[in-house]
Amino acid sequence: MSLSALLSLLENHAVRAEAGAEAAMLAEYAPFIRAHPDCLWRTCLSGHLTASAWVVDPARRHTLLTHHRKLDRWLQLGGHADGQADLLAAAAREAREESGLAEVRPVGAGIFDVDRHRIPARGAEPEHWHYDVRFLFEADPAEPLKVSGESKELAWVELGRVAALNPGESLARMGRKTRRQPEQGIGPGARAGGA
Image 1: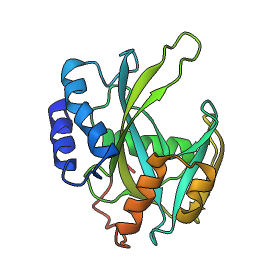
Image 2 (image 1 turned 180 degrees about the vertical axis):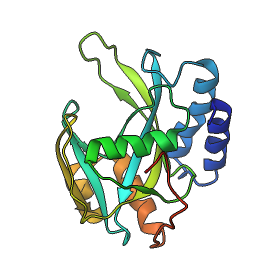
Image 3 (image 1 turned 120 degrees about the vertical axis):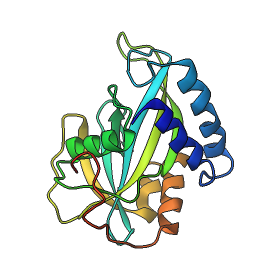
């Protein structure tokens, strides 16, 4: 996937983005990408693209969250693109690396959510923006989890309890979207990045 293909995915997401905050953030993506051809690399110091996996169980009642070690907050799985323009594959990679799950299945190839947020300065790294592109994945909650060095803990959390761990609008919005998603199993052809 190229940056132009990613721009097309973002344009297609505009019809599904929630009005208000998400739509306003989404409007910032294309100008940022066009102005920063290095936006897939964390060396783009003003900000960069990141890829996240909102992982749910097949019944759409729970999501897998990580207690992020550096940010000390409960969040969805995800991380830096590290030059990979195929953000769906990057999100699948991050989900496997951060959870130990052998299999995460994308629920379609379209974008699920976007969120632009400030990351505080840390050491020599200045404060910067993360332009996070999120995809919806399914996984089996019975599969064993393995906490990575980036996390303090992993947990399958009921959607109604997510706000108790992280009251932010970003996770609340993904929870609302999940409740609107039909329960569905994913066929064997819908794999991302070797997931």
